[in-house]
Image (cartoon, rainbow, N blue to C red; front, top):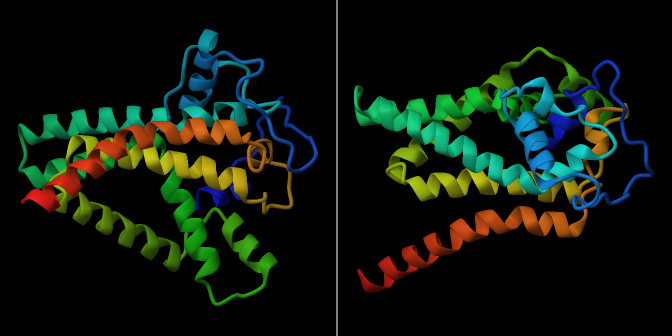
Length: 239
């Protein structure tokens, strides 16, 4: 779903240059850009946060988005912390289940509903009665949302709510999910080809992430998830 957003939703802005290297060219995140610059690029791409002109950079060009990929999970953790803080504040006023909704709404607001947009495009395209590749692509490019896209978003939101309630909205579990979901984006974007037929910002990113950068992106969710896994295993064995 995230890749469909890259291919069909994002388009270059005025004056932006896109990387036109041959397909499959790997762009290392360690050359030419400082870690802070790469983090700020990831922050601006994955959230609605807009930085002052001096920190905003020059836009996503010449592989800067691919260079920012290792920092996607860190941005996910930042979104999780801010959303969890908003939920805890809401829990002081509203019933606990309402705080779960606040957490979900905060994360959607901070990310600009980027994932839900891609999800709705995916559901409209792949679950429509049309078959053929180009018909599916045409549906996914349409800015309007259809019945299948609406149902997909509704079902996913309901599933997220139920899972957060069942897991008691544990802080480190929320951190892990937000970090892992962004790491999965990086893994898929490094392995799968660009599916669009037009030049878009996604072409500077999809299929052009170096293996080392994929490994770096996976380190943070693994660092959070492994202790959670051992804790769960210990509880199951000794309880």
